[in-house]
Image (cartoon, rainbow, N blue to C red; front, top):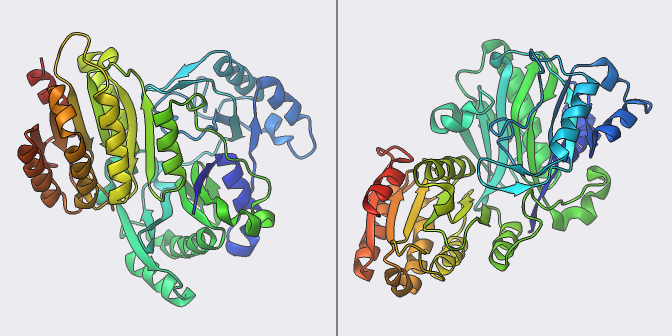
Length: 439
């Protein structure tokens, strides 16, 4: 199976095309346009069926396979107050963003070329929910929360419940599994509605051959659903089966990845074949500080912290390995990082720093991924020692205690400097610790 990310616009179009078949009892009005310029948006507003672009208050954002758009100030939903964006405001903003390269907080740089524009949805935070589905090993997993938006990631373990769903589960058993695990803080008036929608959502995810599907947030206005943000990957080997159900979709190159190095391309190829997420951008091949970070949100936090404390010129790379990668996938990712970081001496003769960090894993077996890292360390130990590499680890999640014990023992056996920390240490404290000792 090759997992391919698709645009938010295309994923919502698939929902709209198949809505009546899967989401009985709920309403969804697909109002989205994908444009490449302000002029394109104005022209679209003059077409039949798109009069709402002139009549509604709007929201505009890039649609280029990267998240944290709000965090990067790349969502236009207000000029002076929320919900006052006009057609002309959106067109002007799109042209402004298109006119020059954009640098994300992660360090990724590129040109914004595709934008999704939709009506503004007036709602409260209490009306926001979260739902997603993916495949972990030989099970599907459904995630649900009574809270939507960025707050979900910040408090995942406390706010999100998960349901492991066996392949081939009956419709009756599926509903019972979801009912038994529905978040307790779902408002009573919406609980049955939420259970029904999540049941239908999983069937849709399964039948449409999605590899990953996330709505965050989902806004429930009685029986009317508003899908404010969506992330999706499909199994492209099913394209010949799903042509009519999917419609015309594309597999765009992710933002900032148009001109990849050989190593970046190798990781991108591995990512396309994996159920996990493997990302790598080389920012400075001569950089002193290299990272192996688990999780997209954590990767942003680490990149920002390193840039703040050490300077962006010392940050060598940006990326992530997450979503339950196998031991072999993690080993390959680590081998790629270790190979890159041992090619050049630090220009100032300083020790190299390797930060293996991450938040508290949701479903990734930390011990399994660390086994892959240990195997790569064994292969590159001599080169890492030649660069006086100091390794700092901070990790939490399933089997993290075993993972930390194993990697510390392996590093000491190999003669590598290492310090390990668990979730009791703040996520970015190891950056401060590393910099205080690494001069």
